[in-house]
Length: 464
Image (tube, one colour):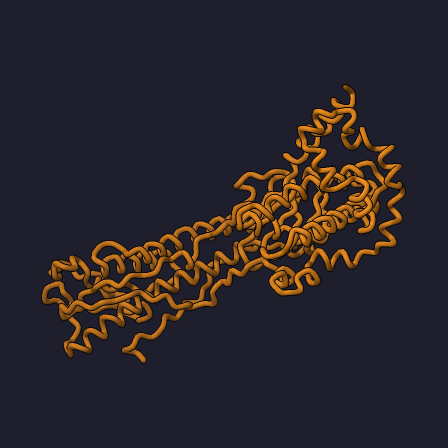
C-alpha cells in the first residue's frame, strides 16, 4: 500500500511540474505581409478617351523581400542523403562523447540495480500482477528483455549511478513500443513526424530510429548530470534537453527560441499567455518579473546582446507594402498614358469639359493647385460605373499615413468604387503593420522610426 501511494504521489508531482514547465512550440506567428496578397485578377478600366482597357496588377519587389526560410539545419538536410545515419546530428553528437568517462558513472551491475531499485523505482510484477498485465508488461519484457536492454544502454554510455537512471532506461522501452507501431503501421504523415523526431527521413527503418532514440536519451542524461555536477547549488527543478544542451527549469526564467530567418519560435519554462508570447516574439519584451534567455534552436543560450525579435522584419515589410501602393499608382498612370498614346488623343477626363490631369505620385505641383475641380460630374460608361481617373493628389511624404489613405482613395475611384481582393489585402497589410509599428514606437526605446527618405517609384513607360 505504501509503495502504491508513493508511486501515485510521485506521478502527481511529475505531472504538476510538467504542467508548469512546458516546452511550448507555439503556432507559427505570422504578421501579415506581401506574401498574403492573393493573385490579382484581370479587370477593366476606362481610358480618358472612353476606351475600355484590360489590366492586371503587378507586384514586383521594390525592396529585398524577407526570405522566410525553413529552420531545417544543414545537418537535418543531410537526412535525405544515402548516408543519413552517418551525418545525423544525434549520431555525430553521440560519437563525440567520451564513453570511457561516461562509464565511470555506471557504478552498479545489472543484478545490483534489480535488487536495489525493482519495487521502488520500477514496478515489480510480483507485487502488482494485475497492473503489470494491464500495462502489457509481459509483452514489453518479451520485446525488450530487461537485462538485455539495460546492457545495451550500458554499452552506449548511459549513466547508472542513481535509481532514476534505472527507471528511465527501462522506461525507454514503452516509448519504443509505441513508436514502432506508428512507424510500421501508422499513416504516412504520422510515420514521417515520428522519424523526424530523431532527424531521420521518412524512408528510414525502425531499427535506425531505435538506435538513435536510445542514443539521444543517453545524450540528454549526460547533459543533465553534467549540468548539476557543475552547478551543485542550482535551484532548477529539472530541465529539458534541447538537441545539444541541457536547459534547466527555473520558475522566473523563460528560454525563448526566436528564429532570425524563418517564423519559428518556441518557449521553455512557465506557461505564458498569448499576449506575453507575442510581446517576446515581436518586441523582445519580457513578462513582468521574469527573465528571458534567448537560445539557438538547440537550446544553447545566445550572447547577452543578441535578442532576436520580429519587429524589424515587420517594419521592413511595412515599407515594402507602402512602396507597392506607389507602384500601383504609377502603373495605373502608365496604363492611361499608354491608352492615350495608342488612340492619339490628348488626355481628357470623363468629367464634362473641364481639363483633368492625373498626377503621378512622384510629380511636383504648385501648393496652390486645387485637389478637386468643383462642380464636375462623372459621365463614365455604365459598364464600368465610376471606373475613371480621380482628381489629382498633393505629393505628400509617401510614408505619411494621410498620403497612403489618399492613394487608396484614388485606387478605389479607379476601380469603380471598390477595391479588388489584392488591393484590399495590401490595405490590410499596411493597417496591421502600422499598428505593430505604433506599438513598437511606444514600447521599444531603440525601435526604428519612420524613415525620412522618400521611395522612388518605378518609371512609367512615358518617362523611359
